[in-house]
Length: 165
Image (cartoon, rainbow, N blue to C red; front, side):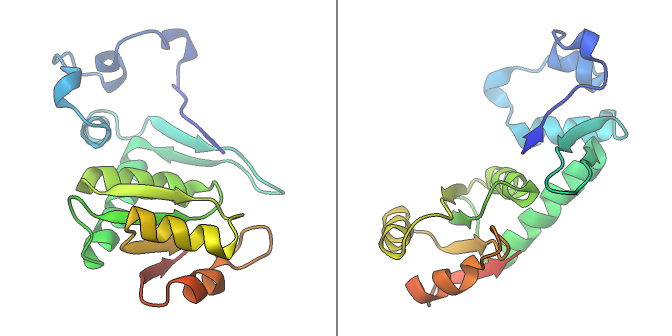
């Protein structure tokens, strides 16, 4: 689970330009999330951008705008190394976790589609989604509730390019 939080809740209703400390007008029709993230990473790099709430026995994981932008960029480079680009389709076969968010944003940055795949799907459902969505690359979670989704993915789509996290 994650939450986007402002560092000053009393200013939550202010415009995006306030949060980025940049008075330049930002026409919404010309901006994508990765544009805003990049701008925030340059304008307020040390401001808290994202907090992943603690799971079982774990503390909250916090990202500043600079850290968050770098993490998304690393994932985007990994996708490019797998030849994912504009129009590509990436399966995300995982539970809700920080990598899920990073994959979604990295895909957006590249112009690719991220297809979330429910880790509770049975073999036939998994095969259907992979084929129907024309998934080219799939990230698989190896720690969902103590089970490893990787062998199930390999059994259904042995020729699919896969990355494990």
